Length: 380
Image (spheres, rainbow, N blue to C red):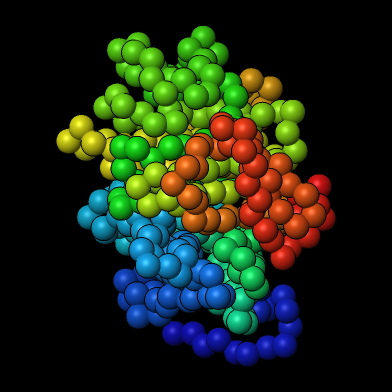
């Protein structure tokens, strides 16, 4: 038996939250499912929703006739890995914090889920305003505390996410952070076009031979050596392709364009925050089923022991990050959604000025997506 005594001491509050995170990790079905909440924000143009169970952004859509949501991807509990089944299922845009992919065998025995605890656990909403949500979660097994501030633009169809990752343990550790948005139908179909400022990369199925089997975006090869275009793959081949963000740019960017719905969806972030782009594609019955538009610090989709034994650096970039004891690391990204015309072509490049993302298309036209945020201050 125990009791939790309220105290004004910040240190005791943090310890109490840490203990509660461990308790809820071990008894998720009993404590977390009843507390699940969906929190929404909206302005005159768009709306978005966050699910507190897993912390995923599950909806971002324009207020138009179609109301197409690019982030409607959702796994069922049965589709989850065995070490994740007691927690939140993957959906929409979820956060991989601590690791990207499988834990080690020993970590799995200790209860660590794939892609880290943050995507598998309950998040606490600390404050909510008209256009802002502040959330947090503590990953007790990972030794990480995550604070998130999500702000919807007050006029335009974009939002900003700021996240702070704190190592709450007494030892430094290897870690990774990967943002994991995933597309599904109806936004995703065989004609959906993916563009980004990726450069050199490799197929994760060849991670031990990444240098020798390197590819350059937008082209890749399947397991039979057939070359195809990752922008709009026509070969039935499921895998994850990882690339370095163009080192000549200060920002990274990813877009997905649905010609069927005349809808452009995308992300922009500081390259220094997330130097890797990962493009997951999954086919079922010869048709594209899911596409991941991932970006992060991780280079290899493996447990840390395997990463250390394989490559600590690829193509001039680290394949993991390090966070010291008590250290806090701050990162941010922007996401936008935009209704295009019938004559729209795919994105060739994205830059920005003070209040606009400036997009150059392959037809040499320029598109501006306005922002109330001062982008020069935010991204330089």
